[in-house]
Image (cartoon, rainbow, N blue to C red; front, side):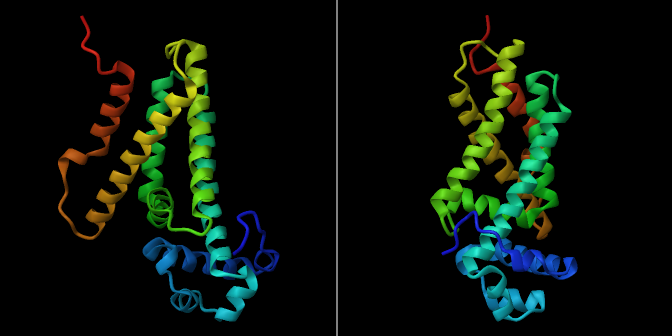
Length: 219
């Protein structure tokens, strides 16, 4: 099984159009069927290449999945870095809202990438499943921890907050919210009925307000 950090120089030397066609076919296959049920026969037919060529580039099915997964995660990291940089100096809860909206935009604009991400998180359907899951959770938590630490420093958040536990709670809520919105988006895309209670703007306002105001009844 390929190591998660393995590079694929033969693939990287391919003509860009062919390289993108292979990646698009892999994204469709893994996004729709997951890793375990993905068919390399369907994938190579969609990419218009031979199975021998595919394995020459990636070695194994696991090697191809790792490449697609890491490309997806790099997209997520780039998006989060952009939000972090664009909101520098803004209040913590304004930044949290921007993170939620950016995540929502990603899941609805890149549904196949989102499908791979959520399968890894909630089913572990991936080679090196435990290691990949740990990487995903650690990367997300470190990003949120940075926002929390900055929020404490600027006085937007309580000074006695534990950044690690707080970022864990934030991450859990954000992941579940975005997964629910992704599932609702996919249902609507398939012609299912709309559920007004899942309207994203209402949920984002509620989540941000809940973290900002807490659950305790005020005097």
